[in-house]
Image (tube, rainbow, N blue to C red; front, side, top):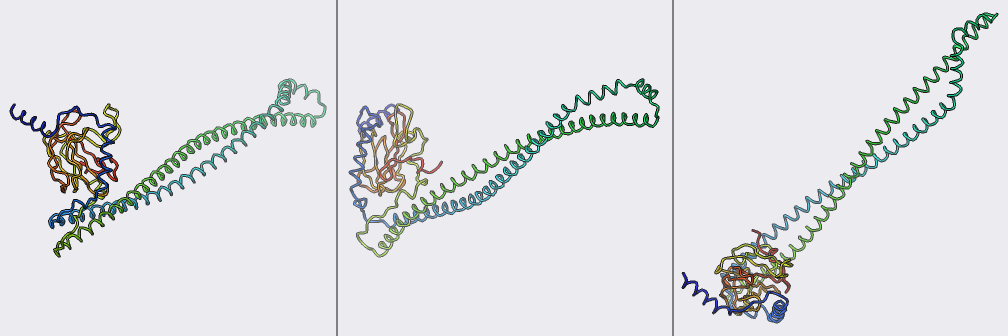
Length: 405
């Protein structure tokens, strides 16, 4: 067991010089950017080898399968957009209904407020009239009270004309009844108006609640419509990208078919054909079996930002090409250990760093799934693979390009 470990260490020593590897900072990025700028000047087809029929047919099948997948995605996006458009129409109708409901509630509230104001005004007028009549009524009631039974008797005895006495008695009684009726009517009117006022206030509170609910529903419908419209714009963007990728892949497929025709006619000197990387976004295989140890982009750790990802994997695990390409670099690179760079054409590259050994040579064409090296220890000391993707010469998040798992 000890001898095997020693042999592995000697092998690693031969494959990669011992060094204090700096972090992947600005110097390493500047150096590797300069490398890409220099390598991009060489034509992808300069590594041309005689085309192989089996490989070309495999490329044709892969292009066809990916085109079918892109078409399914386009159909799905179209269906999703139609569904969202229907939702938007429904939400627009809902929004209009809520707006009309809000208008109705506000109109009802305005009418109730007008009725409440009118009732309050009538009550104020009655109370003012009551206050004005109260002294006179009070004096008259006092006189009637003072009259009493004895006063009526004295009035009867002092009157010589019985007809006049009867008329006076009836007049006094009528006035007393009129006063009592007026007081009772006034009290009833005030009571009814108070009840009406209370009813109107309750109705006003109900309308305030209804208005708040209508405003909330209208705002919710508006937000939902805006969100659906945002989704539709996002789907339109994705459909445009899907169509662009399908167009690129169709052009590549035509080149593959032309190569197959050349092979069928035994034409010599045909350029090597390859499929572009961009149309396979989201369908690229992982370079090694493992788990994500570090993400792309900014980091709060001392290691800083990363242009790629680190995949934790067992030492010695096979690192494989994620796409067909030509080996642009194979060797030791400062900050990346043993590094392999594959050129996939159109300024697209994949990088495989921290390798224990390198299985390919510069200038050699490799196919998807072909071994490029073995996993070694990363700059953090843990076993794993540093993987980076560059599209149009710029680093991109590999997780947006690799297959979901």
